[in-house]
Image (tube, rainbow over the protein chains, first blue to last red):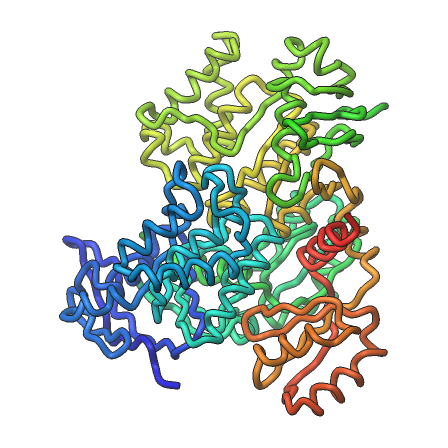
Length: 312
Length: 310
């Protein structure tokens, strides 16, 4: 298959501030690769270097075999970009938006007609060509934005928090489309801080303060990234439970999770000991058990660990 | 004790579309009620009617026993409403924003200083109080918006998708604040597109096309889901998905990262069939197991079945 993206020791500084610090990774052709990290972690800076919009301070990168420092123009022709704030013209119709993007990318008239037909079908927008974009619901808009981003058949598609604020049904439909593109060989790069978007990726790179902390499949990350066990506790009084957990040694972290509490504990703390401790403090337990960490647990763990190492 | 929030055949039409259609929901005091549903389900319209910002076409609702139509002025001082895009003044500081809302809600000068100090403390913004609102991160902005809505100590808090664009760490913090408010007896009505947040509510209503199609405790909704979800790891997920969609005993199939999830009536009965059919089709299965349905799985299934029915 080969790699669509290869970067080595990529660094970008803004003045004294290091936005991206010595990041290296490869993305296989057709892979759905996720960049996960909080706001301001350096995700966007990496993407902008890959797109040739800004140049690295040091390090090297290749996108589809092109050098990101020299061949920006070639790269631009091969990439599509869809941002969270879908860049659509709200007062134009669905068709006019597609015409506009087709024009920007210099598609011939015949080619544009073919692509338009294809995209309207793919995005389930047939019959809505004449609708004003601002009247579309979130899910439709999102699919139209995707259509505009791929009208020139890019080989790499960048998605910046593509499903933020979109409802679960629309999200499911959107990912179906993304997987279809990946199946056709398009390489997908997603930047996100949403866990469910990260779950949809084949590989995730977790980036924080410019450093790539870990890179793995979502499943491996859940199994290996956390040093300790996650204990799920279901109780009536969530807040009191958290306070009490924090007084117990070998409990490193406790926070609200779903309908209960997730506690990060050291692996040598027996579950029964924790259970007795809570009962002793008059916590009415519905259930307590060790669970496989979720990606959110991993995210919070990595952020906390890193915060201990570097005081920002 | 009756219900603190109660809608009675609440209805709002936009042209031919019933945005909210004979809605009957009840919320007990001091609980968190979550309204969940796809775009256009009617969540925001419901919330706006409850906050007396728009008038129902028929039916009504009661908040703390007061009718939202007849007693709207009285209710306004008891509620806080945080819409999707809450207007903070970006060129005012955190402190100035809070003072501004205190003025609007006519918070007595005597208690204003103390109230603001406690809200800043509560939302962890004390050391940021001199920053301009525009300079705050997304999570901090949301916490400031919430603080502005709490300035008049409302008994009822309405939040329309409060955590969009907020990262997981800030999201946890915001929810911790909501739990604290609930402990103080505030009744909270929240809408969200995030399923993990739905699970944090005491009770949720799944809304679709103006109606609540299911209303229960979150764990009850998952328990009631009488189908099984199977997780398959295969050599070729795309092929496996397409093939799954052709099998009549598989109700739904979708990819999630490296996994293929399929919905079936019963795991034990279908496992062998899947293994045989996939093997005939020469799709190698590396692992197959039953997994507990997530809230999102259940939600998508309920809504999809609704669509089929209508």
